[in-house]
Image (cartoon, one colour):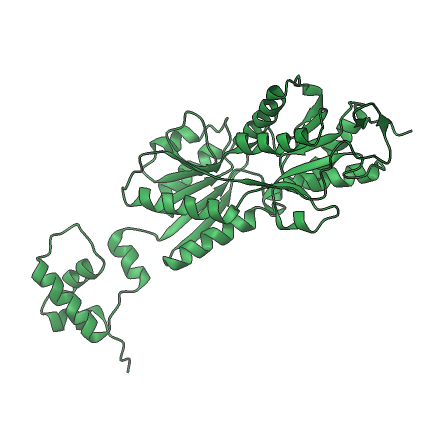
Length: 362
């Protein structure tokens, strides 16, 4: 015979109905319960050591206790993204503390609207965090009109949705300024993704801004778009080398992409940083262990996740913040992959002030 205490035991001790016990202990505001009655129920529950289980709370409050994390990328990119584990770690820690679950979905470009509508209409989640949003996402308007709280992990200009992001433009400008301060004037750029992704377009804008302030004319021939993963970085750098464009440094707007850049430069017989200085973005754990160690912009994925979750829970409570966007700080971490241009290089084309790399391997 089970000795488990039930809500009926609490109701019997308090002299109220089982429904009243449910309303009080699950903090259900749909019906007004007199304060003295509510206190009797709580006292009885404390005396008996009764706590409603999570399922009962969910039924009573009409909540699923689940948060959705939607990643707007194809599955193969999700699997190879070293930044995603940081996001998941931060979210799962926060969810565990609040007895909530996580529903992880990914959506490929062109399928956003259908996926968002299915998630919001099925009521499987109480709130949604959308990671890596795109400027051309046709589903964002539907999310703005949905009856579910939504937080973008990335800023979309003109959107009414709340967001958490880093200052991508400012951080990229800082990264390029680092190379300029080292004497580089021919600096290539490889984006982290296609430009419809806001982080990619903003980081490219930062690259352009740094050049403009240094009175260096922007050359689109020195820019290549990558696609989040290592292979795209390799392909982008190969394309730069084969173009015969001259450059002494490259700003790569993703450390994961930079790993492919390392491979392409090594295959071409070029040394980092003696032939080409490289600066990355994200400061993934591997950046400190590859050779040479990678100069990078440090971004805390865990902090982004926690701030996104905190903002989402505020929206779920109906607590609307004054600002729709939260911008987190970054910092540049100089390491071995970037060098001062005045040092004597080992190979390449010599000039009076710098050495340029071209795609022609003599």
